[in-house]
Length: 281
Image (tube, rainbow, N blue to C red; front, top):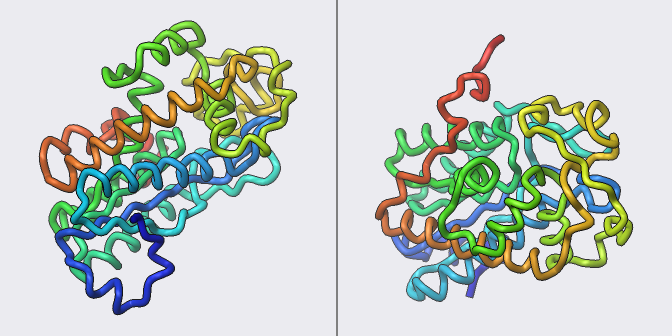
């Protein structure tokens, strides 16, 4: 079974074989997602996906202990409305570094971060923390979600089902609170989705304009979503969640076995200096 780490005693944790213990860490900000979705949308998605990956890892690597760390509700690059908390990217980096170091000093070597939020500054802050930890302790920590999201939004991922490819081609500017996230939340917790989404007009904005966190009142209809909420369905959401969990499980197992995982270490934002935590204009 997949274990929530907070339920263990320190002796139970300390007794686990280091080379066969995997830590999964969900992290995502609280952020507005339009008037129809909860501010915890990314947080709920991260929790759901992390546990799904954990359960599949346990099936494929039955002799491993799979531990889930309590979800961390932090993020940077959030879109501005009442409720969300914006963290400085350096703080996000420091929190991930401290977490990884706290596990590394006790000999744990398989730490996987599931950062469910698409902001480039968020992905890069976590990548920086992982890079520094891996340099200091050897390859101990891995964050595949940023790589996955950067391909989903801006590239091409071969493993994505054909039905999802066709939807993305038909509705290409679904960035935030649109059919993707609404469909996933219909599967995760339908009670938290306001049914008004069925009547929402599309809001199409170039993704490059979303770099300004106050963009929600400058583009579209000013109520916080960018995409096509009315096109949402539970079927699409289930496909998206199952596909995401499957792909991230594959990446995670490659990291655990230290086979072919380095291709997933960095998003394409990694080489852009303006997304680094030490960037100065």
